[in-house]
Each structure stands twice: as C-alpha cells, then as structure tokens.
Image (cartoon, rainbow, N blue to C red):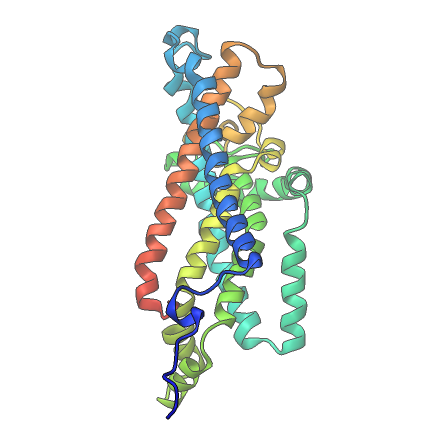
Length: 313
C-alpha cells in the first residue's frame, strides 16, 4: 500500500524567497521612496525659500505691483511658447514616427531614426545660437508680412525686425522636443500587435485605414506620454530661450520684442540675485514646479482613461 503523499514545504506555505529577490525588491522599493523624498524635498525647499517674497509687501517686489504681477507675464511667456512648440512638433513627430515604423524601407527607416535620435543629443545652447544667428533673421520678412496682413490681431502687431521673438523661440523649442516625441511614438507604433494590423487589412482596409484604426489607437497613450515629456522639456528649457529672446516689457504680441519665460528669467538674474530678489526668482521657480506637476498629472489622467480603449493594457 502506497504511503500517503505529503506536500513539500514550498506547496504548504509561501514560496521561499531567495536573497537575490529580497535584495532586488528592497532596492526597487528604496528607489521609489527616494524619488518621492527628492520630490518632497524640492517642494519644501522652494516653499521655504520663496516665503519672504510670498509675504513681502507688493511695493517691495520688482515692478512695485506685487508678486503675481511680476510672475504672471513670465507664466504667459512660458506656457504660450511651450504650447506653440507642442502644437508644431506633435503632428510632425507622429508623421515621422509612422513613416519610420510603417512606410519607410528598413534601411531608410533606421537611418532616419538614427538622425532623429542624434538631434536629441544637440545641446540646447547650440539650438539657441542657431535660432538667434540663423533662424531669427530669416523669419523677419515673415513677421513683417504677418504684421501687414494680420496686424489687427494683437498677437501679430508691431513685428520685430530682429526676429528675436516669442514665436521664434517657440519654433526652436519645437525642433528641440521633436526627437523626444518622435522616438517615443515610433517605439509605441512598432509594438502594435501584428494580428491587429493583419485583421484590419484582411477586412479590406487600406494601409492608411489600418494605421488609423489599429496603430494610432493602440499607440495613443504612448504618444500622449511622449508629448508630455516634450512639453516638460519645453516648459523647463532655459538657455535656448534666454539666448533668442530680447527680454522686455510684457506684451500680447508673439512677433514683437519683449516677453520672457520663467526659466530664462531665472537663468539671467539668479547669479547676481540676493535677499528678496532671490526669493522672487525662487517663487517663480515654485510656480513653474506647480505648472509642470499639474501638466504631468493631467497627462497621467488622460493616459489612464485612454489605455482601457487602446489595447495597450
């Protein structure tokens, strides 16, 4: 008569954890906690250092009209430049990503992808010098045409002859964030399940219809994530914008002199700042921190909503 089978310790209880699993799990948890601590530390530092400017009388702040009157024109320049850059770069990046992933021959696609990735390695100061010395002068005639034909719109009144305007900075920012959005979108489009594409083609869809109904919906969360990464870089870009813009009084004009972004303002004035002036700049940095955090939380919300319908999960 056979002896009754007895369960091994592995089946009766929880699985034995190996030292490597314990070490890796602890390292992963520690990394996650470290990120949260760093984020909290940055937030606490910004709040504490900006407190003197937040509580100071309005007449003591630069401009003499209060902290918000000092910061909000820079918020306008930062947000408008970043949004324009994203609007210009996103459709071009998606088109390049689709060309590389579904239209170009393998060798050509690999070469185009390499060039796009190489563009991301160019320092921002190089983009700034290129935008100021080469790109801005060539946009002068375009701005003159916009003033002549659309000057009745405040955004296009009183064009700058030098071309060093907020719109020029926005276009340069679009070139800078193009590689980020393209690279993320390309990799996501390449991950589209082959069966989804073949099913669409088998139902009689053309190649474009297959891309529109199978590839783009699948990759949309990744495209949104890449776009938000690009927007984050545009919001925080410093040197390129500081080199291109000629800081001046705030205006609603995109093609005239004036306007500045928060990062450029901080970069231009931080080395010589002290006392309350330093607190003003840190308060501006705190506002930028909040804007960036809000943008990323909003992007995370959009991705979570769309992932349920994209097949990505």
